[in-house]
Image (cartoon, rainbow, N blue to C red; front, side, top):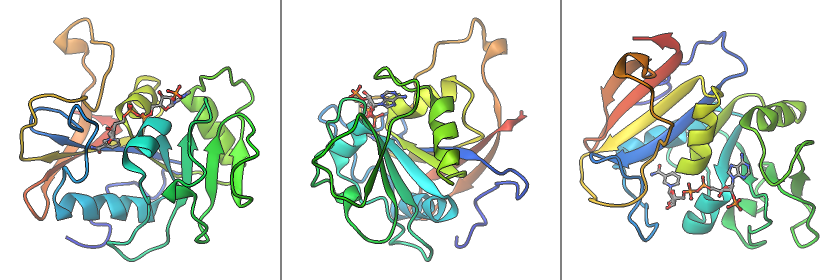
Length: 223
Ligand SMILES: NC(=O)c1ccc[n+]([C@@H]2O[C@H](COP(=O)([O-])OP(=O)(O)OC[C@H]3O[C@@H](n4cnc5c(N)ncnc54)[C@H](OP(=O)(O)O)[C@@H]3O)[C@@H](O)[C@H]2O)c1
C-alpha cells in the first residue's frame, strides 16, 4: 500500500498526536537484551516512515535513543524528514547520537542545559520540569515551537505515559507474526476496574506487506 491511504487522520484534527509501536504476537516490543531492530516486516517499517512523513516531529524517550540509536528519517518513502525530539531529563544522550546529525531537520532535546551538544541542537526545558515532564506540558512546549502534529514513537515508557494521560488521538499498533517469549511490553497502563471499563478505541485493521497487521486506533471514536 502506498501514500497516506492507511492514515485515517481527519484533516480537521490539528494539532494531533499519534503513537506508534511495533510488537510481537505475544505483545513484546524488544528482546530482554533491548534488541528491537527489526521486529517488523518491510510493510510495518514503511508504514512507520509514512507516519513520520506526515507529522511535524517525532518524539522518543532517551531509553530508545540509547538502545537503538535511530535515524528517525523517512528513507523508505517520499517526504520530508520531521523534526526529531528526545526526552532526556538526566542528560544521558551522547553528543554523537545519529539523531543529532545536521541534515536540515530540527533536533530538539528536552533536558537541562548542556554545553556539549552541537550548536544546531535546540535545548528546551519545559517550564515546570522536575526531572519528570507531563506529556501535556511537553505538547504545549512543542506547540510554542511551531511543532503541532507529533508522532510518539516510543519506547514503552514514553508511549504509555502519553496514552495514560489522554494525550494520544491515535495509536498505530503494528503486530508482527512472531513470538519472543520475553521482553518489555509496549503499552503499560493501570488496569481498568472491569472489562466494561477498558479503553476501547475505534480500530481499523489492515494487513501490511510482509504479513504485519496494523491496528489503527482512534481514541476520538469508541467501538
Ligand atoms: N518495537 C518498537 O516499536 C519500539 C519502539 C521504540 C522503542 N522500542 C524499544 O523499547 C526499549 C526502550 O524502552 P523504554 O521504555 O526503556 O524507553 P523510552 O520510553 O524510550 O525512554 C524512557 C526514558 O525516557 C525519559 N522520559 C520519557 N518520558 C519522560 C517524561 N515525560 N518525563 C521525564 N522523563 C521522561 C526517562 O528518562 P530517565 O530514565 O533518564 O529518567 C525514561 O526512563 C528499547 O529496547 C527499544 O528498542 C521498541
